[in-house]
Amino acid sequence: MTTRTFRPYDRDQPYLLPPPLQEWLPADHLAYFVADLVAERDLKPILATYGGGTRGTIPYHPELLVAVLLYADAVGMPSSRRIARELEENIAFRVLAANQRPDFRTISDFLQQHLAALATLFVDVLTLCQRAGLVKLGHVALDGTKVTANASTHKAMSYGRMVTEEARLQAEVDALLAQAEAADARDDATYGPDRRGDELPAELARREPRLQTIRAAQRVLEHEAEAEAALTQAAREAQPPPEPRRGRPPSPPRTPPPPTAQRNFTDPESRIMPAPGAKSSVIQGYNCHAAVDAAAQIIVAAEVTDEPNDKQQAQPLITQVLANTGQVPRVVSLDAGYFSEANVEAMTTLGCEPLIPPDRQTHGHAIPAAPRGRPPAGLSVAERMRRTLRTQRGRRRYARRKAIVEPVFGQIKQGRGFRPFLSRGFQKVRGEWALICTTHNVRKLWTALRRRRRRPGERVRVCHGGRKAKRKTQR
Picture 1 (tube, rainbow, N blue to C red):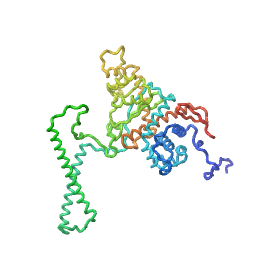
Picture 2: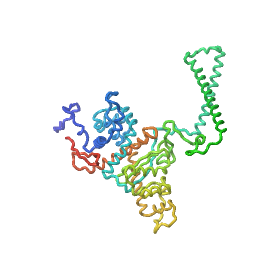
Picture 3: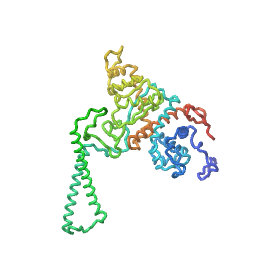
Picture 4: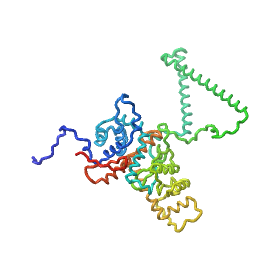
């Protein structure tokens, strides 16, 4: 028998006094940083939605739910059911919730109700990143990624197929009605014209004539409306033509949509888009864009569109960068999908240098020699851009684009496991993407401030004025 002594180990040993939450995790843990960050934010738009003190049951504090949702997105656990499970098993979640345990329905309803208010935290966190010196706007790279919607491609149907399916289903209905009439004729011969042998209840028997009455009334109203419209049109044609009026011309008659127009029955606002990394396949989803600063990979602008083409999103993203940061980036790099003469001229007018190849980049081909001398006169916008990207300076700057923006999508999709959207509808998806980008910036800010902290036993939080307040943990 060994004589070695060990530390006491008794899982049934009760605590005389419960340990404080500040001792449950390391002092520089992300959960403490998120809690301090949310404590400094203005949650008045969310608080204003709650009723008076005597209305309903006592709800969970919004600060608790916001902190839990931000931390869950930051660590790649956006599911409300997963969050509810972590609130029971995960120490970091229990610290954020002060050992309270809202159920998954409370978390889900709070997120759906306040998604727009949570999306406004993007600019707030971006401002903190600027004050911390993480945003330089020397080089901003733009790119987009296709994200799967909360809907299946099998639930989408084109207009042409809808017309075909309508005719097929109508034929099936007519065939079923013919079979029913034949069966009724056989029953009349067997049981008599007034009895079926298996009589329906009186309530069901009255519904068929009521339906016929309603349909007859609808037909009468439709005929009356058509007659009134015809009389109005005839009277209008008999009058002399009026003088031309200012404003928009009258809308042309409605025409049916093209046969290839798609509509999804689960999320009608999502679209069929090429799958990322596999251009031969498609997904039902949205096109998500981000503008990333080169200094610390901070997202300075984010947007969602239902258009698979990227060309129309370049100018709105740069405008959003200016609105969010108050500055114009010096260099902006984009891939060939964003190129247009209008985009190049608009960015040049704003005061930044655009780097957008007019042609898609091909791998394995010989690189053309760098041009020398002054550019010839009379070059088009595309030719000038090609010449700029062939110079050594242009190649060096544009080569940084992949290292700036594409790792961000990898960190969001692969590192945090964000794949399909949980919400449905364009506005909710837009808010969810803003929340994902916000938590990306939160992680970058937390990492940068944690590296700057040197003295043990302290944790760093960012206040409204951008100051770093150090607070000693209780030991």
